[in-house]
Amino acid sequence: MLKKINPTQTDAWKALEIHSQNAKHLHLRDLLQADPQRFDKMHVHLESLLLFDYTKHRVTEETLSLLEQLFTEMDVRGALQSQLRGERINETENRAVLHTALRDPRTEPLLLDGEDVRALAKSELKKMLRFAEAVRSGRKRSHTGMRFTHIVNIGIGGSDLGPRMAVEALKPFSDRALTVHFVANVDGSDLHECLQKIDPETTLFIIASKTFTTQETMANAEAAKSWLIQQLGDAQCVEKHFVALSTNHEKVATFGISKKNNFGFWDWVGGRYSVWSSIGLPLCIAIGSKAFESFLLGAHNIDLHTENQPFRQNIPMLMAALGIWYRNFLGATSHVVLPYDQYLHRFAAFLQQADMESNGKFVDRSGNAVDYPTGPILWGEPGTNGQHAFYQWLHQGTECLPADFIASVHPQHPLHAHHAKLLSNFLAQTKALALGRPAADTAFKVFEGNRPTSTLLLDSLTPYALGALIALYEHKIFYQGVVWNIFSFDQWGVELGKEMANVILPELEGEESLGKHDSSTSALLEYIRARTKD
Ligand code: G6Q
Image (tube, rainbow, N blue to C red):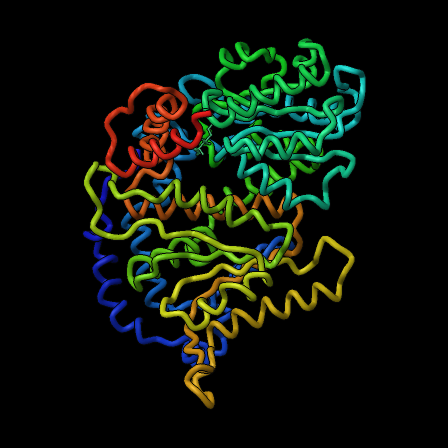
């Protein structure tokens, strides 16, 4: 189990508080100038995969050793072992957290309640890979005997963001004869627009829902089913055109999907960590089983990396520690992720859920309100687009926040001149943010600089590299949650609004008098009801 330690009571935290008073005055310009060897000491290179450069951070050797001490006092390594061993570290839901087992090729048993989770994961993976290949090869046919050309994933949150981001990221590796669509929103326009683009005879619907009770997904799934039956004029078509990704076999059967067409997973896979499970099916169909296995392996190798490397060579630990430094000691309220890669255009949206749903918590592991900031706002957009939008704020705004710059040395397209331009911007931005321009003819043109950045430079955005990239952030999020003494794997914060929506829905649809609400909600409800009467 995870220890319950208030991080502010550790020696390292207290020392960091004192140290930060002086460190506030450090300028990256001086740090970089004072030590020409700074890069040599502050980067991690994973051969033929990626380079992580943390030279442009407002830290000294002392900062880093105090952060390392904090990690030791908070026992982050012990916590990782608790996770990897399958202890029920998601205490408020009484669940283990074992998404790492889904990508673990090792065959030694890993037991949870007497069951070997590695073996379970492998057998479900095999079933999914076989199915994906059958769709890709055309062996799996539609109700009217056609090859599938459209795949529609219906799911939301963790059952949407991961596969959606990854399908976009790995487009160059995908079979272009298959188009993968994603429908998430209960706003009917999402499904409606999708239905305009697909051919009912050649569309496979994937209903992705761990619980198979989520309002949005069930509404879209039912509507898609009715639409298909109406289009093909035969209720039997559901058998060939619908599959499910779910832990709830009963509900799947009630919907009309047979057991063989349900690809299962388990309660020890959290939604936002589920792209490695059967929730990855749309990705697997898009890129094929070999590439999907490579995606899993890339993540597994980061699991081994973070388990075994010392702090100064451990990328997720460094990412986590730097984030804590800015959040808790230098007052940063947000963290920006800037992939200079159009294929990663959904990466920040994916991370936003992974990070903010995990670490946006104000209650510690003992149930007390924390008296220090926890997870920051995470946001981002691809470069160079962002440069023409919000970078003004990054360069000359009044807040200083850490940024992750991500790019690949080799592009996945043949337009090499474009890539040189992209990378020149990529390098120029982190340099400009760090050094600024202290003197100018007017104050308006002054750049203070001292804006910290990490650079994550992939060799190329392959399935293996994407798996690794996601796993780096997953572990970062985990370590930060451990240090902040919060539970990162529950999400009680999403419940209240859902409960209230269930009360409001019948009131919105019905004629009866309204229940008790605050004056604003009542008035808005009345307003909508009055305008939708006929
Ligand atoms: C993720 C959350 C949440 C969840 C969705 C969809 O960690 O739990 O985003 O994934 O609410 O849930 P279902 O998969 O059960 O439909």
